[in-house]
Image 1 (tube, rainbow over the protein chains, first blue to last red):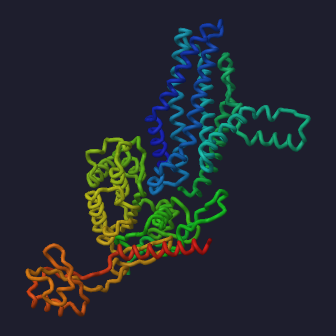
Image 2 (image 1 turned 180 degrees about the vertical axis):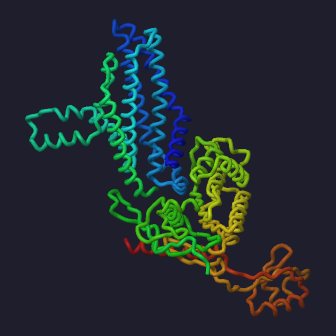
Image 3 (image 1 turned 135 degrees about the vertical axis):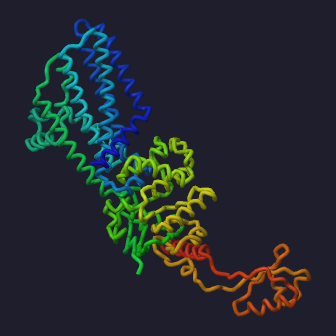
Length: 258
Length: 318
């Protein structure tokens, strides 16, 4: 566990010293400021627009960081051969992977916190006060963070056995598929054979369910999020990330580096 | 009896080649050797001979196709054994967003040193490799030679029992090479076992207790540098000065003049008669040197033979 923490902290340090990250966060804050302008021309729904646009900015920027940095977490270390000296230390490859994962999730958490602070400042500026129901935004942000953790785990798994470009495509593809998991389960298509429908049904349970993490609409309209969903999403993320990281560790532990 | 620190048995490594990875290229072919406790072992070979492949197999960076290797009696897959190992990769590259101090501190953390121990060790190592004034500079601003020095520092930072260095002299200027040589000799004095790969043969010849020569993935010879090249003298070279004509005696006439001095090569049996004859002809003997084949000559012969064989195989393959 100690080794995992050491690698995670260094991964976080690397991200913090990367100027690209600051540009992305700055871009997100800019989008929130833009939400302020859009909100002003939206009669009666200014708050809804600001929250929707703000959370979307947090999610999109987070996804970009999760996919692009997540894919590079391992491949960059292999390409630049920075991993060689590290693997000669008393650390297993599984610990290295877990540390890298933890470091990027920590980075995403800090970035998200910065962006959410910006969002609340924009809300405060526009509405002059914050309400108790605005705390729902925090739950939406927590779900975004869980979703990002899943995306990082997916990106890392793919980057363990394929090229960075393919890993980005696979991660992006799975993310998009995961947004329609619930629809896949309920979809009824008479033109499809029964076998194909059964396959799709079971596939929907295998794919990461990102649809459950989307509560932005509800939160933006001031509706609450059920506590059971919070617990469900938390456990789901822990379990799914655990499986993905385990698979990544198994593959990476057998990988011949260049 | 000496204790083997590194044991390699029939180690073989094939790399898949071709678009579908259906072909294989053998990079290491049944390597068997031992490195004994407390010795400096030089691993010699031309580029692509299998030196780095062997070292990467020992460090668990790649996995063998066949055979096995142990360090300190433990299989190389056991990462706990890495507490006792220091490793310098070939042409090392480190996290360039860190300073040398931060990098060494980062690596020291894996060895469970206290914060105070880490600080002290890091400063000692930076001094040892001549980077005490560059410790706060980001590694992206380091030259190749400076990175090599940081690499050496991280390899010996935790006071390991076994130090494995892949081309430690590469990228260093002559002063840097001497400093690295001194560090290796100091490690030996401390009782450490050092294995290093190099193609700078005079360095290997001067500091190694034993060397292994690998060409084309196969071990071609192992032993002391003298054993390897054949310790028997191949004659003597007599260096002398003479004021008169250079043909005052039959042997003097055979000597080669270089500046004010003459050089004469004679066999072991002919040494004393030749010295007597030169003295009688009025020559002043300046020195007598035993002529032995150097490691470099031995190495060049092996490489030439391997290349000739490879060319023959290629031609017959056509």
